Image (tube, rainbow, N blue to C red; front, side, top):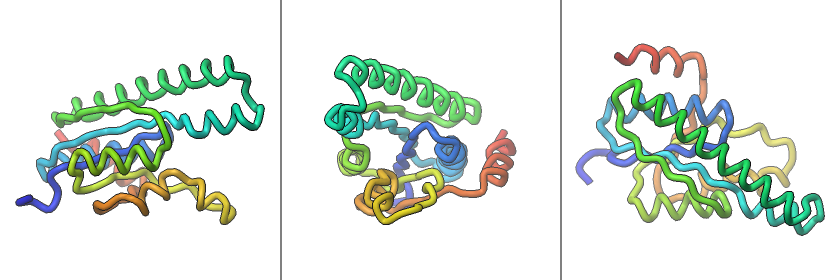
Length: 162
């Protein structure tokens, strides 16, 4: 490694914070010349838990998983468009499994230098800390982590790129 940041992973989870993080990651990639990746993980662990607790029937679980996979495609397409508009190359990936484990696996397998996340959700209980997948990913990866905040400022920075 010759530069501090050569490979950036952007985690996309379908939240507004993730889109703000995407804009920031595009700006950062453009400024540093780092290779940019985006990852969306369909949380199949949560789907299995919903099936086990009888919230879903098997057919409902399959239908919901299909909907989540379609969401992944839409969000990744939007992120590709954000990058393309600013002349930044991005590789997008969609997978399924336990979110924090899939992020860690991707970071390890692709020699990622920086994980970029949207602002973490406000934690209301100790139980939520344990189950927040972004928080678990942040703590579990072996690379540096950047949590993007200040949507207005990020939007202005993104828009100012020619």
